[in-house]
Length: 335
Ligand SMILES: [Zn+2]
Image 1 (tube, rainbow, N blue to C red):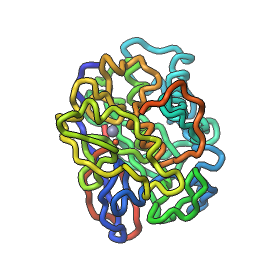
Image 2 (image 1 turned 135 degrees about the vertical axis):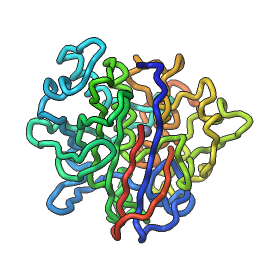
Image 3 (image 1 turned 30 degrees about the vertical axis):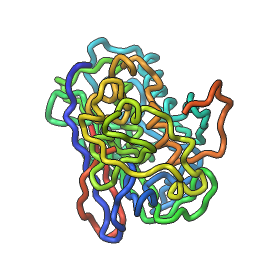
Image 4 (image 1 turned 180 degrees about the vertical axis):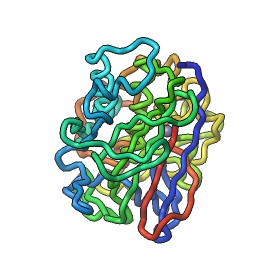
């Protein structure tokens, strides 16, 4: 299954009220680098549901337990409960890892709420904001491809950034995400691939798009050069993000790299819809498969003022737009 080419599809729907989306491997961007949908760093409640980073992002597994969730899928080798649990945890932990190049830390954290919150979903390629903040679901995509979708809805509430900036201009708050992993009987997973797929989908649930399908949203980078995709799509740019106002980051802008550039050998981005960045340089066994681009995007969406000590200095997404509803809401999906 590892070699199977994943079909890719991402759609983004935003409201009539939203301004033109232009920049970033983010959804709901406004202007060049402005706006973007992300989870609120301050307590935020909508419709009686707490939907923010306050208390951690709570996720829940369909069936209410690791055992039940594991057994909703077909496996090449059935994983032990312990191994399955570690894999789920590692997929979330990867997003909490310190950027090894810049030392940038993160305040993101995730809480397994399966025991107390029942998931609520509507099937593959959909989202229902009820249930946990992030629902992990198993649903039949109607084919035997090992793939998943991640959709979220967002409100027009302007969030507080993790750096402390309040009412961040033109932003929107993610108010619920559903990750649907295909559990068609013919979709046979290895534990490693399942973990990589989940890690990628969690990226979407945080607001990152697929790098091949940026559409009019654009692709944030510092120096993309079509003549040197390997050199310019793999370098670190997280430190260029202005943590108090990412929209004002000097040195970042949007680019429109070709799919062939993104597929350049050695460019192995976790947020590639096709292939999930799995390659010799980023093997499926890698439990922290974030690359410089994902760390940069994490810093853009959830900026931190803190960097751990790093040994030495060193020196992106995809969608189509549609009009939807009256409120500013977004839906994101990808494989
Ligand atoms: Zn994707």
